[in-house]
Structure formats: structure tokens, C-alpha cells
Length: 191
Image (cartoon, rainbow, N blue to C red; front, side, top):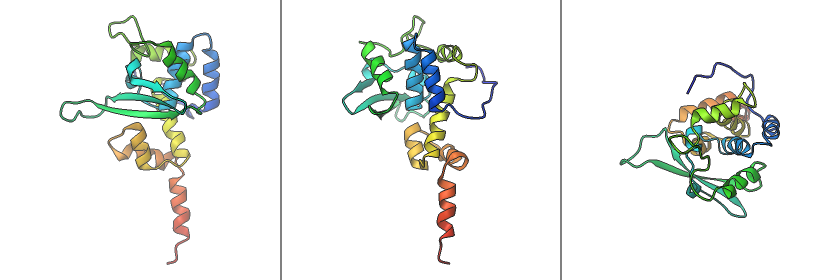
């Protein structure tokens, strides 16, 4: 995948994503891609390979079984993690509609050799709506917002399936409330 040469001063916030979703209203599949990337924060390469058998929903949650690609397989088995998202989430209607639209096969089918949308194809789709967005920015945006809302190291590692806590620490230190909270706690010490 080509290196991103542009930098942003901020992440994709919900209001900005809502604008992109509105711009893509004539292309529901583009909306679905943005919804999946933003809601679950998985790597684009883990999202585009989702199969219809990997996803389900009920009255309360959407379930997605992701194959984690940046971990070392143990005993030759790929790491698979199931994530769930509440049906109350504002992106849930898009994701549920996407699941309902696919009877079998890939969630993001393509005519290409792989049978599913590629990372490059996802980048191409997103660039139709802004030169200032790319697939990994959706993941980064979710991690920043989770840190801003008080996620801890273990929570970030569990959601994003990071093996190295340094990544989670960087988000908490840079964007999170944890450092401020810890500073206040230590200001109340009795010694």
C-alpha cells in the first residue's frame, strides 16, 4: 500500500464521518466500508476479508469474527477474535444493512483475483470522498477517541488486538485522560 503523504491536524470525528456517509449516500457499499472501518477499528486488510459466515447480529449486538493478521500464529493457527458492537451505535444500521445484503461470500466482494475488495480498492473508495482520509486513519481515530474517553492499556490492547502494550501506552499518554487523572490522584496523597 502506498505511504500516506498527507498529515491531518485531527482525527475523523463523528460529524466528519457523517458528512462522508452523506456524500456516499448514492453508493451504500462505500457507506458500509466506512461504517465497518470506523465502528470496529480493525485493519483494512482484516475488514475486507470478512466473510458472511464471520458476521451475525441479534436484537442487541452485531458480532464480527476477525482474522488478526499482524500476530504470530500459534501452532500454525491464525488468531481469530470476535468483536461485538451494540445495536444502539449510530453506525449499526449501516452494518446490519450490509450483512442483510450479502447472502454468502465476502462482505466486500470484488471481481478481482482475491474475490474480495483489496486494501488498494478501499483506499481508492475513500479518496473519492476526501484526499485527506485513508483506511488506517479510521483505526487511529477510534483509538484516539477511546483513549480520550478513558480507555486503559488493557482495554485498548484487547479491542485492537495489539500484542505490544507500547502502542496502547502511546495512545493513552498522547490522547488519553489517564495521565491527567493520575496526576490529580497523586496530588491528593497523604505524604
